[in-house]
Length: 255
Length: 326
Image 1: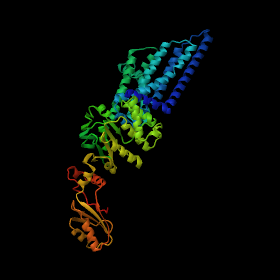
Image 2: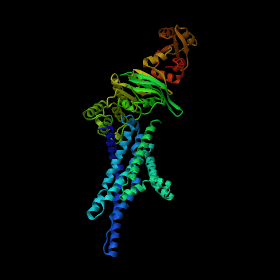
Image 3: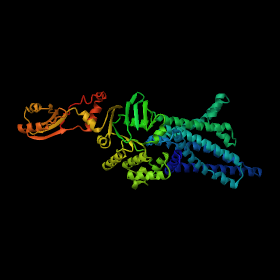
Image 4: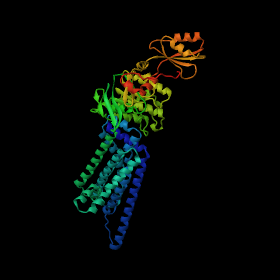
């Protein structure tokens, strides 16, 4: 077992012995399940209306359920992922294990990567549990799997970006609450940049600001459009956040 | 094994340590003695590659802390001031994690864990969560962590803090046993600890090394005169004068309780016999007579109080007469 694997194993262990993951996980699954139920009921009601008016109904689950659901999950992730990431570095600093970690024969890049990977795995687990929704729906209806899968790809990329912002925020402070709010704030800013961009309209600056927001990139994926530009956005954003985290962790040694 | 050359660490305008140099040979135990905020922890943090020095060079086991930190870290066992334990893990889980982090695996990891659990008496608590353990046990888990990969160099920041007296003695024994095969630096502000386990003492104050020697040498260097404490039941008015006339006695102080005197004598001359005879023949009622040797505690207090003079080698030039009856 390499040092990074040891760190990931330890972090996962820490996650699952604390109640945080269970609480966050249940809330997440509950809300997602509830929303899915509402969207399906809503779609059903629409179908019944159409039947009465036209005699037949062909409703599109992709549009009525999945697109709405993916849009909603984006907002839920914005709130719950900072709760998962807040402890990563802040707790180490508070409990004075930070010094131990940095004097162990493991590089700072490995520490940052290990911390990120552990929370990413937790997130993938949670996201995997939502997989039963499309599976159950597939039993009773027909829909196009392709945009659902690209939507999940979008969720994975979006989650990774959110988590990396959380890692950075956690590295900045030794107070977990502050870490959660800083990452929440940063994510909200990234969200609202889309609004600022559209206010500025179709100018170069407006487009540049819109590009910085995850909104349109994520929307493309949810609609089934896999564009390299969007993938580049997520991957480069993730890399930038992890790089900044590395710099922040490194700089705490100098103080 | 450890070579520190002229390291300086500044935090903004504050200089935490100032041109500190010392070295530790293989198998030697060195005590770092100093009041709080003297720069002990800073020095240790530089040696463990936690933070870089502003100036100067630190070498551990032939590797430069600034250039090859990973190599240095592999060869060091470090116990910080606060034991670095994860409260949500059990003792075995924690040691397993530490071992893997340092590249141990399989049978070597299991046997190393077993060795340290036995050595530090953690057998009864090995499956309990560290968060539920007392301060003393956490400290021992911290020590087990530092020793787990059998490092060449051990750096222990106040290793006996939080332990009960029996455990303190055990840990000191442990450190003594490690000497010879391991190089150890330990910081402490408990003086008997330094005398008990270390071959050499570095006294640091205000970020600078003010003295470096064996515990015995240090007290000898500081003792510029022999001192005798004398208690009399009924001293006469001219007792002072008569005492001073004894051969070898240089000074007589009478401060303190009535009837107590402090005599300062020439170095290497024991005036006790003469003084006793004089006291008896004069009928002063001799109650107590004893030589005062300087404890490391006095040395420490004097050194950290008069560091300026000492830094230039004028050892204890300004040492003030201890006017209190011992």
